[in-house]
Length: 493
Image (cartoon, rainbow, N blue to C red; front, side, top):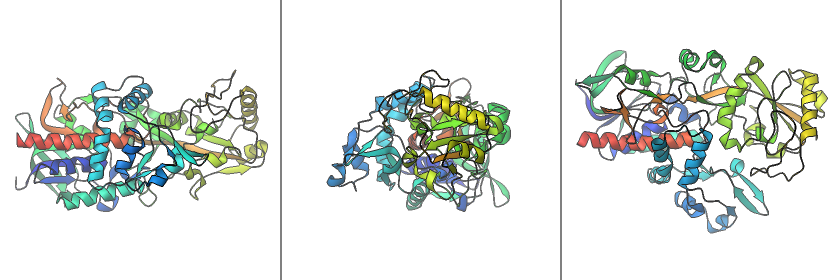
């Protein structure tokens, strides 16, 4: 082979670039292979809203990574501590204790040190004032363990990571899909790549797979997740088609995690059918449903909108929408909660219907009018007394209806009224490869495949059924950093 690298990283999103940067700290020669063109670089990470969940010891820890927070600004912030055990318990709770404990603990206990490492490598962060805090008596109260986002969302993340990649002299090949892993005596020794119309073999001491799961592959979605998933739209890159998974499986890697599950959300009815690089930043999602009701075209509710803070339910309610007639639903709000809706409800790209009365609203949307009005009447009758607190689970609930609404149950009776049609958008699949705490890919016997590592969506076993908001980016960065360091150490052994 004419070309040889210490480490080859397959993929060019958050996890892949974190892996490349980490490996470059110990190795001279690192190559990044990206299937897509340079103008569509960044994978799913490019489309993220940028919120990133990590453990922290109060506001002082936040200020270490956001040094621009002045003393005056800090005096107006109420920032509850969110330590690693809080994070771990949230992760295990929302996955019904199915998350692999060793991988879950790597994610949560290495989250803050990874955030500091990212900061030291030029990644900038901001507080999420608009969607993760409420102002009360002159102070901003944050909640949900998710107060921080990456500056300028996913666009900023990919730009800042690539800037660091360039500073470190890491080689990146675009439009160069990896096709096959090369092996010799059970060890991974390189990658077969399509480049400039030719098939070439590139040698390497180690390979890191970080090129996403199979969510962009409609056939695989339908095979592993169900026929209805052929009707979900793709929120991110079209290049995550499971290539890396198949390459690893072909050399004996063990599949792991919930291949029938995924991160999916309720997104605007007119969201592009595949991630649009001209309108990135997660602007189409619709996540304020805990403050209102969700009804299908039959005029019936089908989930407990107030089960928990949106950070802990939005990634599982997308599939519930997919189960409804015509694979869609309506989020309905009245004027008393409209001011609390997240910013993406109030942009020009939003699809919305409004009317001064519920009867008039029902005429404007495609819904069973009589059932729609009956459902809301029954809901209003079931609302219990209590104080409404939009920033915390307030226990203001319904009684006597199914499904219940466990929190934030205000009567929906103050016009004007708003209906936002939503469909299911898939973000990433939960199925991946079996890796250990060092991000080494394991074979079907549970032994590491020498020279092969994985990170990002390709790590199976962390998320099941659900997902704490902001954990995908964090998992990508944590296991990217670990994979890069492990691969580098392997090459030096």
